[in-house]
Figure: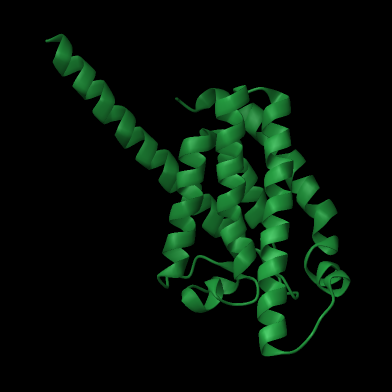
Length: 188
């Protein structure tokens, strides 16, 4: 009898995790569709990445981000501008999308090492954003130079990073505030 209850609880938790992950993917998708075209489009993707990690935790949040990237990679139009496919991933801005996975992994690592402390979560998101910027910028530069010609790091940073720093930090702050209000209603 006891074994059956444990198995039922495990099954329910797995189903619950899948539902939360699906909601995280849906949130990220909808937020990516809200965009202002630019060299790297202004979207709410980073807000969704921050919110999903803060609300769902490192494991479920990172899985949601990974599923989102995989769905877009296979052609489902979940990326900015209702785009999808390997062309987006292997395009100039695809490195930033891949960078979201690194943000999730860093958040997962920090929360495993330091727990769900306020400082650890914020530090993980900031470091994850820096890694996302670095990976995306390196990817952008490589492809841009391959396809167009030489370009300087300062130029690429002025196109792809500098305009996004303050908006992304604001998105992080809003995601943090929202997560504090919503988190008590999410079952672990």
